[in-house]
Image (cartoon, rainbow, N blue to C red; front, side):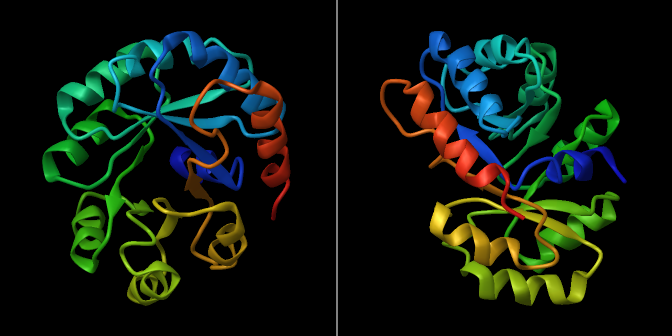
Length: 203
């Protein structure tokens, strides 16, 4: 099993995190791990993201990845900060080759058959289907998965808790990405742990 597949199979949901304040990073990570979700994606959408990754990487049991990685410079910065896997919204040859050369688990975003074929040309078989709902939802992924039976997916983008079961019922889907587990606003550790616990045992 490839390293990225082991990460995808660790929990049914990968929380997608936008962290504005570094002081929130460790409490969020601890609350998620306490609820059974230990694979966490910190998106590089804020100035605090890289420092947050470095802080969260110190939390026992947490597997921290960097999301919204779009180029080689961001890839290098995320790895230096302590990211254990990389997630991108799309796939370019340059980013794909850089991730492969860095020997880091990589989950690139795809939305079309051409995207998947580009990934396969690079030796990649695990993808983020993004933006999942806006790209046609379950019906679209079913259609895409047909010609590419060996590929595995993590749908992300617009997925809520009540949609999770339907996505995970697809045999090619190993996990889903979602932001609902950590609501926006002040950190409520008890609520985050409760939300994580509600989905962490899903199979």
